[in-house]
View 1: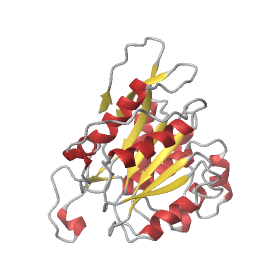
View 2 (view 1 turned 45 degrees about the vertical axis):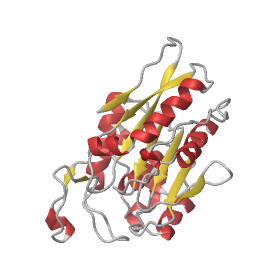
View 3 (view 1 turned 135 degrees about the horizontal axis):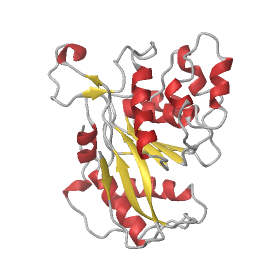
Amino acid sequence: MPSQSKSNNTNSRKLKILMLHGYTQSGPLFQAKTQRVKKLLEKSLASSPIKTESPISGVELFYPTGPFKVTSADMNGVEVREEANGWWKLRERGEMQEGVEEGLARVAEVLREHGPMDGVMGFSQGAALAAMVTSLLETGRSESFAKVTDGMPFPQTFAELQHPPLKFGVCFSGLLNKHAKYAAFYEPKIQTPVLHVLGSMDTIVEESESLALADRCEDGGASMVIRHAGTHTVPTSERDIAAVIQFIRNVYPGGNTTAKKEEEEDVLDMDMPF
């Protein structure tokens, strides 16, 4: 499940990121689709480590697979790939989603086994989940759940988890779980810095849905919204990924360093639809 890079500095450590795939994907498929992100992040950290107590000069990405198998029946007869999975069973947007607790439990397993993580990245349904996970790991969030009547209870798998708050989250084509049952995830607003990356030609997740999620994240320069020129994708251009890398650097004291520009350009610079 993990994707690793090596570091020659024994005093350094790796940036650990949880990677959450979209609906009808899997961990291995998402890993293949985000190789450009991994490549440029590795190059940035190798050339200019993030200065922390233990310098961050490598990256380790973790790609779990959602617990629900997606079939053609779930997609109104549309044929789906064999490795199609979801984090919960998809219902109409705005309605209660079936199986959210199971999806969160799968993530909690990964955090327990491989954590602590520095951050999380997610795409589409995985981005919605990434924001929820970010919220659950914040200090005091369980008290927010206790104050909401008729809402989803604080997940037991996270109550039992010993994991610090994340440093950052990145949501590619994210969306908000709008049903009142999930209010405690977003109220009070998510305090962890979260970057929201939107495709300007995305016809699957409307911009208003992504902005609704961004609105539930505290602003003030830490949480941001950026747009790329593609559709419902994780961007692969150097310029777009550089913005994501700079955002990650900015959450660490001493990390605000513009990485050396990569000279080479290749076919991976094109947006790749999922």
